[in-house]
Length: 91
Image 1 (cartoon, rainbow, N blue to C red):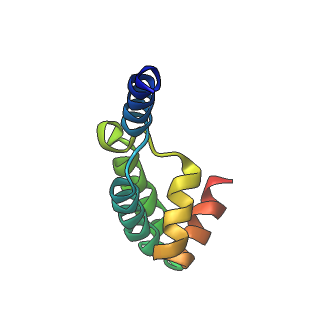
Image 2 (image 1 turned 45 degrees about the vertical axis):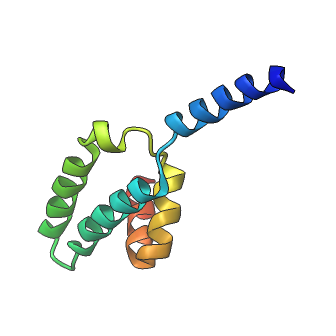
C-alpha cells in the first residue's frame, strides 16, 4: 500500500499542476464574451472585437493552458450568442 501512495500523490500533483482550474477558464470566457459583445452591424466593430481578442490571447501566463474546447464550453454556458460568434470567427 505504501508503494502506491507516493506515485499516486505525485500523479495527482502533476495532473493538478498541468491544467487550468475552472475559475481561470471562466475568467477567460467572461473576457471573450465581452469581446464578442462588441460585434454589431458596424463592420468596424469586428476590428474592435479582434483587438480585444488579441489582448486576451496575449495573456499567455494566465491563459496559456486553456484549450479552445474548454473556452468554448465555458462560453456556451455564460454567453451562448458570444460562443456562436466565436466559433464562426475561428473557423
